[in-house]
Image (cartoon, rainbow, N blue to C red):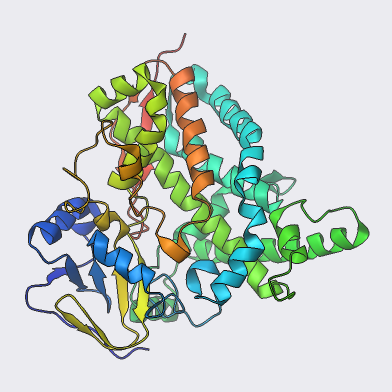
Length: 425
């Protein structure tokens, strides 16, 4: 679908979602969209519109007969069969029922001792130094450890540590979500796509193929059981009609879990700590009352949502505010923009631990409705363990230099480096 479907609209803001100033000043742009009375935008580099109104986004997500996920959550029209966030009911309903056991709160809670042990071990490794780049030392490794544990793949083995090439894969794939189709094709034809990143993408896919083959073999021999890991669960859990996920679907789930389950949580963890370290009054209040930790996590998710937004396409031509949409037009639902809607959240640009927790949880950081993030409870558990342990083990926690923004993945908002320091006892 290379024919252009969008154009500038009078009164609708023009925004380049891949460049400055959006990558640095997106909150100011969202504020302008809301205060101007037209919470819509047209992309100047990429054929799509965007919406930042919280009620409008909710309305669209409720109307899944019109607003489809079938062309994928990114800007480009996905042609290959996807999973969960890239499919619609009834296929989505089928997939959700299969993965329900693998994403139960009981299962997530069973991981708490291992997550806690991992965090403590990581801190043990750098505590005596009194300083560290926490983004690389903990925010990246913890979510990867959790996802690899769920998948049943060792993050470190005789071949080495998989962290670096997996991160290259994530940056390479997520980094293209807002890149126009013609630019992606130009880069591929010119051979300008980073070779290391291409090797990482291919290597990660082969890792999943090998793991799927191994799980099948060990299930057949009795060495693995149905609940040994999530891949075994996918292989042995039938859907409502008695059929099973195809190998292609299972491989798709592996890639989706790795990308969506680690990259977003990594951003969330560093965002939480940075927000607290730059809000001294709130941080002091939290230290005096750790019961506020759940609120601190939710308020950070609202104000600093890891994902700017994801796309839907309209199944029929329709109007969206002042915009008339052709059929199958890409529209970016701006979770981060909806979270700053002054019609829903008082003084939305302010971080406050005086808000009502239930009201804060109206944020869209995990999506809404049919496609609400199934891993949200796990991300919250990781955030809770992460923050409680840092507060307990690193006294006089503080920033130790400028935090560097992560701009290689425009669809995400977060940090690439987060230097901190503490007092060593």
